[in-house]
Image 1 (cartoon, rainbow, N blue to C red):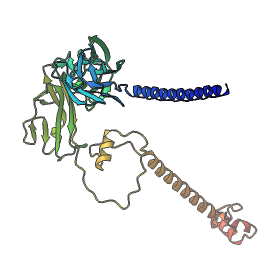
Image 2: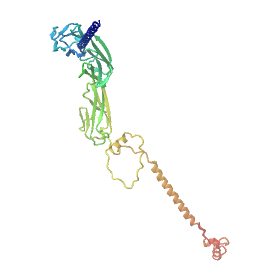
Image 3: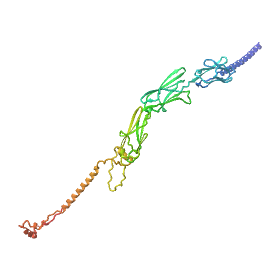
Image 4: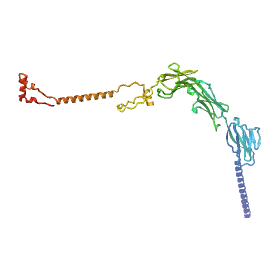
Length: 442
């Protein structure tokens, strides 16, 4: 009985060990199977390509037991199954086909090629991965509408820049001689692409003549450059005239050139020179060459108002120059006895004559004498008055010091004598009135 129990116990132990080993082997096999299944997952990436470019689609797996890979387009049409081409499209080519990779290329991509592409791994069950192919629509070269040549000054015009075929919508910008200005933008969808318009409205003036207006298109598909169109405005306007002179001060004997500079479109040629409303004097010293009026040697007979007139089909304009010829300065030796002149007050504004004198360094020979110098006259009068008073005082003191009483012989005894002879006799012996002989000096 004991023997029987021992055998049963041994049998149970052996069965337990065998079952344990079988379970361990089963678990290990399951783990290996799961690991292998996880390695057989297709790996792909989304792509963006410019219209007309080449798209390369790549599908990879880390572990593959020779299971086939397949690429399908958005319409679920098979493109390649392994290295076998399934769709007749000359744009689609095989790049590489192995057990772990399938790469194909699509050339001359169009907007119709955009969509979701699928890579399939034919295991049990089939595993798939999806990648989105984005196609960028390239904007067309912009066009500028609404410009007619020429434009008249004062006209109001509207320039419109249009570009189509962009995806996403393009950015349109305006430039005026390379300086950006703002326009009114409008975007319209047309299927998968967009049409973009931008408008400029402004009043034309003469300063717009020759100005370049540029419409520039920026887009993500234009990586290296941008599309742009330029139009140059031609503005017609009435002339205006200015006269330029070669010297600031006109002195007798000098050379003078007057240049008539007309501005206008069309150019107002030729110009007409006149003097004081009439024709120019026929002198050898006065030469007219095109827009220039030249005086070889100025004199006073050239004085007058010279007028330049320019005309085109939009109007007439003129400018005037008043010529005043002054005497040439003469050189004189400086005086050593003349008093120093009193400096003139220069704080006030200079008139044209002062300006000419300041520029040339010469005194105006034709200038009228200025008002008398009252300070100098007052000083002279004061000196004369002071000298006169001093003379009067000296003469007064001199006369006062020599003042006294002088009696003749007749007068000395005239008080008590009946006649002149008696007076003389009394004067000779009269010593009682000796005080009358005294002299007084002050």
